[in-house]
Length: 57
Ligand SMILES: [Zn+2]
Image 1 (tube, rainbow, N blue to C red):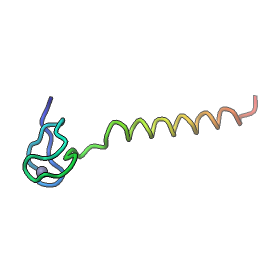
Image 2: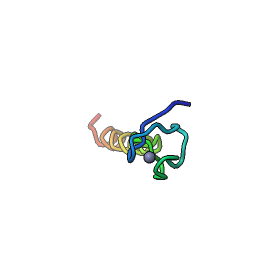
Image 3: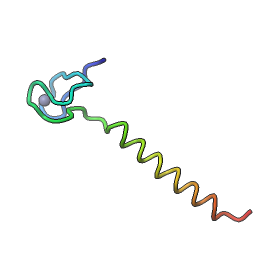
Image 4: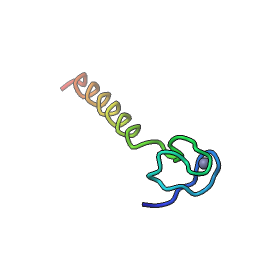
């Protein structure tokens, strides 16, 4: 567990906090969620797959 900066009030918040204890904002972390990166990776893999299927062999 580590402390991060709230995206709204810039105060220290636990990285596991669902809401900021200072200003009450939902998901106070600045970084995108892991799930956002997972979706991006799946989309990228899909495009690589399409390119690979269409490439002449
Ligand atoms: Zn806050």
